[in-house]
Image (cartoon, rainbow, N blue to C red):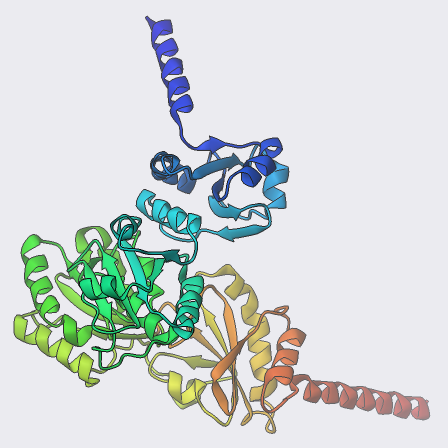
Amino acid sequence: MKYSKILYTLASLLVAAKASDVVQLTTEEFDDFVSENSVVMAEFYAPWCGHCQALAPEYEQAATILKEKNLMIAKIDCTEEEKLCADQKIQGYPTLKVFHGLDKVGQYQGPRKADAIVSYMIRQSMPAVSPVTAENIDEFKGTDNFVAIGFFDDKKSNTTFQNLADSLRDKYVFGASSDAKLAKELGVSKLPAVVVFKNFDDGKAIYDSSDKNFKFTQKNLKSFVALESFPVIGEIGPGTFSEYATADVPLMYIFVDNAEDREELSEIARSYHPQLKGKAHIGLLDASMYGGHAPNVNLREEWPAVAIQDFEKGLKYVHPQDQKITKKSFSKFIEDYVSGKLDPSVKSEKVPAPEEQGPVYTVVGKNYDELVLDDDKDVLVEFYAPWCGHCKNLAPTYEELGALYFNNADLKNKVVVAKVDHTLNDVPDEIQGYPTIKLFKAGDKKNPVEFTGSRTLEGLVEFIKEEGTHKADGLAGKAAEKRDVKEDEKEEKTAEHEEL
């Protein structure tokens, strides 16, 4: 009985392995496989990798769907094919790369879900712009969840639309037609125009001269396509958050943990969609699963809750949580945001007293503008986290750096060395890791320069000197002090010699 079970298990595993539509590649097979297929997605993985294991069923599902379309998905075990993975410069698992032959390689960074992978690979297999006719339009509309078709009959518009498609082909499917009759049947009033088809909301949107802001420019077309690609009210979760976070539009979160609040708040938000369009996307977030995200937008984990996050400007707007969310209060929150009357919420530690500052100034959310954006001074800011080991190692050097300028009467009013606990304070800067060090130059605060050199005293001083507006050399005074000490020591020795 025991052996029967083992044999059955082994047989099942063998059948499962044979049934897989993901092609397992070795180093010897890789080049030929990539060369023989027009487009290939390859996963570089390690068997022990948890993220790889989580991806496996989604990847398998995508492979099965794509196989029917003659699009190939492969995987490479980097614990077995070490040389190939080294040649491909694989630094983490899983890494998903897309090959158009061996020379044209890109990295897939979208959601690790089957439908997203399928959609991406279909786009990769198509030309940037596909010809659309009355005969093939229904088929073309079904190629993806969201497609955009340009209608025009002049060379300038064709060039504009082609450039748009080239820049966004990783995200959307594009088609083009010069058939004015077809355009009219779809509701277009005048060429040129763009019509998008989507499998959500009302299913279609048109951008043509009936729009008061109509201009057939790449900027306007990109804005139209991007806005229409999001549903009126979407779902925020691991598979969609990155799309919202990288959009050019802020995101309104509606945290709910029950069906009644979901329906009521969705209805209110939906009624304000025309006013919010282009100013904020609307997303529902299941608080029972993802409520831990609330503190990131300055909310307590109490439901329902509403906040708006402007990723580009680093601003957050919060519906007061000591006030029940009603139709009246939610409507006022939206109206005040749209009209620009709503003040952003700023997470901040207590502002230090002036006498508590220095030699490394403490920046908090509420004194950020005063200290960092002081247009007369070069301000070096370290964005840190208390738990960060690299930040702790840097601390003594950073304190010594601050003292060079703070204790120098000539430099104190030109250079400020500062730090901010990024976990406790809101700042209008995009910070990817800790520590991040940026120099905000006098007279040019909109273009901070990030420090990427060696985190030594000399390296930081040289950075301030080279990149700063004042070209201040913090070590110049220290060198002079050393020379004075040496001169004093020399004089003392001479005096001692004379006395002898």
